[in-house]
Length: 121
Image (tube, rainbow, N blue to C red):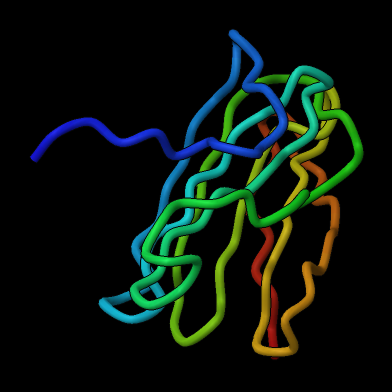
């Protein structure tokens, strides 16, 4: 119970930021995604036994400035997170963190009225 400062040492939060969070499990902890003053997408992290059990800035997700402030995130298993945000007027930016410990950035076209495309693998 109580209040916790989770952004100590992190770039300042933009007053119009979107927010997204994921719980990665009892060991890996939490991640919170936000926009800084330049609208860059950043990550804050908390994990048991890491950083003296304190929240900390965990770096930039994507240096490109998105068109809007919406953020969405998803956890899909061990060390796999996805963050989505509006890239520009017709594209969605997708940043995926994989078990290789790197962010993989791509852009998906989001055409209004277009039928969803199915990927076959």
